Amino acid sequence: EPEVTQTPSHQVTQMGQEVILRCVPISNHLYFYWYRQILGQKVEFLVSFYNNEISEKSEIFDDQFSVERPDGSNFTLKIRSTKLEDSAMYFCASAQREQGAGAGYTFGSGTRLTVV
Amino acid sequence: DQQVKQNSPSLSVQEGRISILNCDYTNSMFDYFLWYKKYPAEGPTFLISISSIKDKNEDGRFTVFLNKSAKHLSLHIVPSQPGDSAVYFCAASEYSGGGADGLTFGKGTHLIIQP
Figure 1: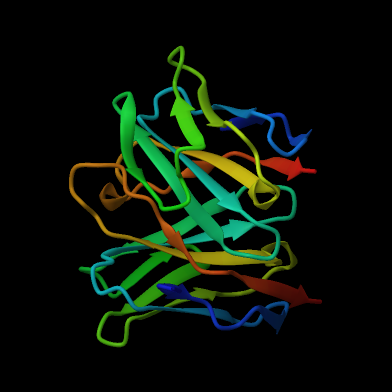
Figure 2: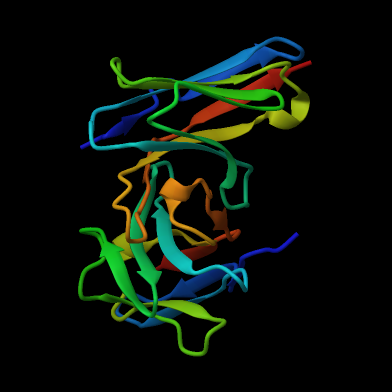
């Protein structure tokens, strides 16, 4: 069964450093997403990406965050200058169609980001 | 600002019985609802969804009921099996019709199936 692959599974970084979280969505999917889950809290939407541009972003997705689909297979989330409160599990997801058409996302297993 | 609420952090059910997980929402613009299941150290897995034009959707042991007037939905699992033990997230979206909508998740309910 096709999978969404995320690397690394765990990343530790110092406050103020830049991190790039990588995702390989399912190959024929067109919609891409990043979500995060801070320990003990709910899963929160960060950003959606379609047709090589951001479709929607939440208040969390400020200027410190950016996304890219550099080569048609990878989908990356960059945090320019990490803060302690960025520590969370970051989930990438992809979908073949818009949600309203009946398709649920396929999520990756997540990258646990720890900022120290 | 909790637009999607799952008021039970955990639920314990005996194997073979029915599990009922509840979810309430406040945003009347939501028109598409989903349930995800999550095991530790894994991403959420899509289970079942329902459009606001329906009040019931069934897939095997899983049935989702939607009561729009009460802004309430529930997930029924019958019969419950040990492998159903996981965290269940309710999620909702506003279907814009043209873009990639983000989902709003509830905090999750940890379902424990007891033998």
